[in-house]
Amino acid sequence: MSAVAANYDTLQDLGVEVISVSVDSQFVHKVWNDQELSKMAKKDIPFHMASDGPGNVGKIYGVYDEGAGVELRGRFIIDPDGVIQAMEVMTPPVGRQMSETIRQINAFQHVRATKGSEVCPAGWTLGKKTLKPGPSLVGNVWKEWSPLEDN
Amino acid sequence: MPEKKVGCARPTGAVVGDNAVQERSVKETTMLSAKVGTKAPDFEAPTYYQGDFTSVKLSDYLGKWVLLCFYPGDFTFV
Image (cartoon, rainbow over all chains, first blue to last red; front, side):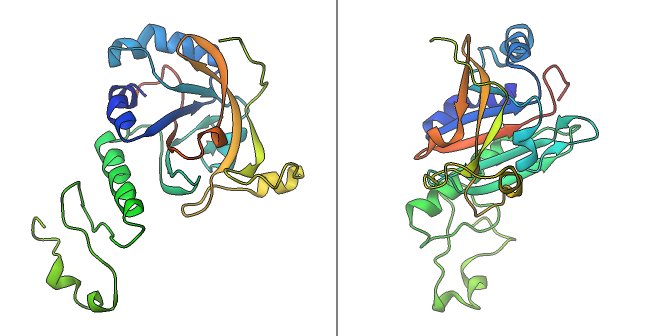
């Protein structure tokens, strides 16, 4: 979570609010912030750290591990209409990559800004070429975009 | 900020932006699940937030982008 905190200003610039969730109590969240996270991120955690002790929220999000009684590493990008645009669920031993999360947010925001008239091909980052779906593009993506080139 | 009592974390039984449904049975609530391309299941949960014990409700963020991150536990290593 310290990595999310460290990137919080970037997320706020993109108009993104953050909520973290684990089965720990809000009281343990405070101690974790005070004792460790704030030292790693060089600041206090700037977002809500939610407590989901019984796993009620984790269960409906498909990230609650009944056997271990904890939540998996689940990351959801939710748009302003409340629609889940992306999810990534990982087992505990491997951490997330914030630059990938931010890349996906950039891409979904671009698609939304263009009302879906532009879509973002594999590996798209800000400033790279988008594609405009339509009859003339069918069968012709190869003329517009290649995974072997920096488009 | 006054301390707010919210009890345990709980799904509200509705999805974000779904104002019509106020009450759903437990069975209907447990049938809700998160899928990409569909509205997020709403929930309310107690939180620690910048020095205060308060709460958060997902649907209060309607109109904004939200990054919702679950993780295995405080004081774990990754």
